[in-house]
Length: 218
Image (cartoon, rainbow, N blue to C red; front, side, top):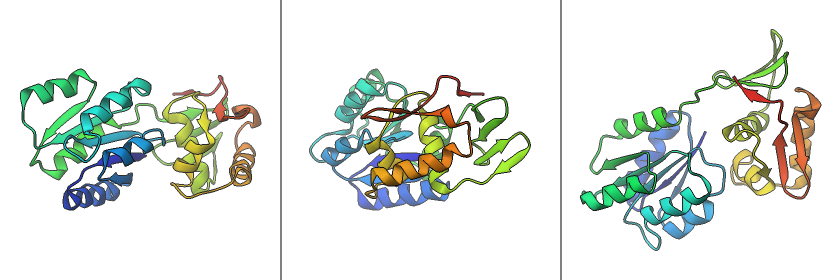
């Protein structure tokens, strides 16, 4: 699960990053609001915004985020204790507001609560299902081995079931920001289709890939 953190205090930023990574989250860090804005569409499962950062403040980013992603969890962290700012953050759709200084464990617990996967399985048909908790694909009682990229593909698809994962989003999430090619993307999809029902993944011409309508969360 991938998290974006915007915080211009590098010491605090590094602490948040290392603490979240110990909990097996993937963390992308930014100290500048402009840079964070350019990354908003990169397939994150949670956002952590400081308010007072260079160029675009955290509240403005939250407002922009909610235009396209009304349900992805967002936490505001700030040394600003002004009631008006707090009310504004909640009005724009933040899920929680942490006043600095705070205990890092408190932030971790809020992330765990907001990002908990309510459904355990991605069900492809009566036989094939993917277990989010163990990261195992089952064909009946048989365990089917998945590579890391195949796992990331399934988790990217399931974050917003049946949405179209664009090539850019796949590159950012599955290749973790490294540049790749359409050939590499198609190669992983081809291997994955051999392990699940072939038509579970459909191509959306010119855009990317999506799961078919029969796939569901259970």
